[in-house]
Image 1 (spheres, rainbow, N blue to C red):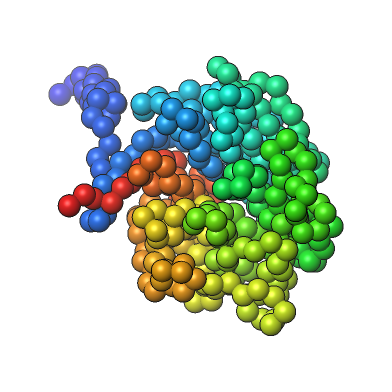
Image 2 (cartoon, one colour; image 1 turned 90 degrees about the vertical axis):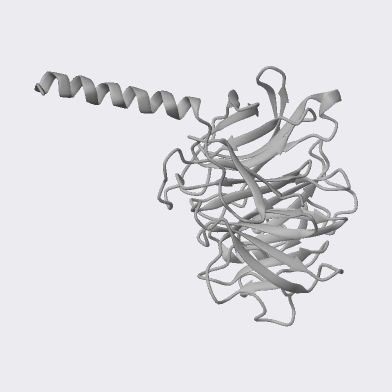
Length: 346
């Protein structure tokens, strides 16, 4: 066969492969107890996911892009001027519970002088930014970043210690905390220290979730010592002391001293807690007793996906995202992805 014909054959096969990859949907991910499907791919470090009232997914990518996923199609609705350096950038997102009336969406992101919480109006695109809280200490590492509405209608925000461990013990500092604010940006009257601080002594909390009215949080520890905590108003969670080193601090319900999990987003699904793990490269299921204080069993799931950043429940499904393009992972074909799973029906 002539060289020219071989070249045309190779080109033709390449085109055919591209066409087939478009026409043939991704194969389900195998995990025996779950039905799973990839609903978005070729993303760049998706960080947080929330849902609009009509069920559409809205999510952030750390370099500054906010997008809506609707029936497999992605529409970019905003490019926020975030400063992405290592762990910083465009991080958390929260849709207002009254979105149908006010069109408000809230973001946590890094700019040149710190981290901030801002509110945008979402019409066709994000408009009319209003900065609610600014100059939260930031650094290349330990920026926290999760933002969610609690069952009390308040905004809860996780912040890292910005590599300054002592700041976590200072209740006047916004670093190394879980913050709580009214959605107009003011301080709730019943906050414990007369400012935004709700709990303190945190190193780098990256996940929060509620079971009924009880708040849980995941936290990165230093070389192992990652934590799962039950969060109570005004309590000290110890950092820079590690896990259960001191009786003066509220101990975690789980401290991972045997390996590094690097837990990120967390969500309750069918009464079990699911933890997205970055360095642990898994979605970890934690089964509790009826009071949700004692761990009965843990299980490693979806460990073939690489680094997992987000976990969130919505309408009978659990959604999670990979984070293999964050500079610490090994991207696979079509990374990064958002995956939707549900427990198989009998």
